[in-house]
Length: 380
Image (cartoon, rainbow, N blue to C red; front, side, top):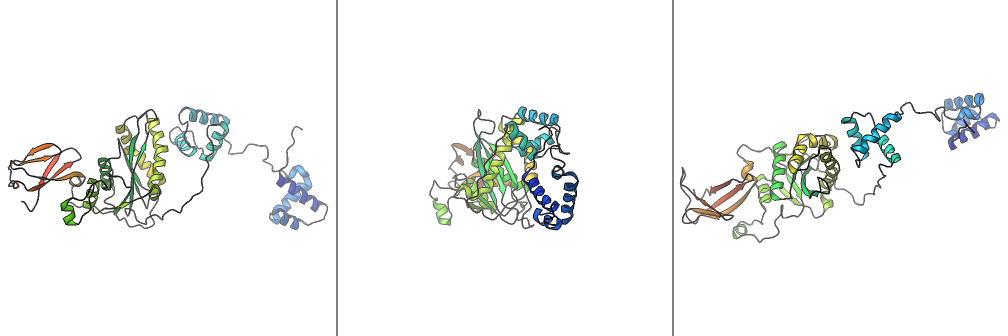
């Protein structure tokens, strides 16, 4: 019948108890105990029931719009904007974009999620229960960084995959990233160089077993054997100069914090690239450095358990160009020519005497491509 309001199970319970009070089978005090409400609230309910009957027990807001209800016109405007621009975005990120960039707020992520489910624009995601205990994070900022590359079609499935080099502090979740074509030694050097410029030298790095970080494919040279040193990659040698310990991770789960941060980038950064129309690595790095990483850290990073910063500041005599480089030891020819990577370099007499023929020199190739030949102090 028109105008009829159906009672909930809770309302039916109230009617049953209050009818017993009406028949004088129980007291109002006992009714309060049975309904799980205060004595004062039970007196209010009894008064409403006595004056208005069963209908008076139903909540007065039943069937009415909430005072906080958002207008249907603005709801439709939000859904239309989502279809046009943010299709595929999760409710949390989409709500942020709609409020911050489109000015369609205020709107909560939960409200948007319910609207999207109702409109068939989003589906519920099953949450899997954790199957292993996570390692406790380090207590100090700079105590341990996790480094890894994420290969992903960052510019869309129609483009080739490239690699996002990602550094994450274990204690705070602070991240720094750059995009490169592949996970190369140069890319690893550049991301660590950028971190040192911002925060200082960390104590340790957590990396996987790739040849970029650890050397597996050659035996130690005679000089390394005499010095009791293990073979090192160019990246490993740079870390050794800086006093950074490299710790090996034998599974993706071992460096779970950087792996989970990959997921954040593969969600939010991909969508940001799409919104900006970015299609090149240079454009992607401009977006990262132009505030995207700063906003990401502001949202997801947290304070460390201990306040002391364990980063070490770069000393005045250290030049990162001489540290993040490709270093080889070469012999000087009888004509004072040094050969390196099939290039021949003629040594010319200057203010210092030339090294002796057949002596050893160090050839350093900086990341900018310039070559620098250093004479051993013993030879000088």
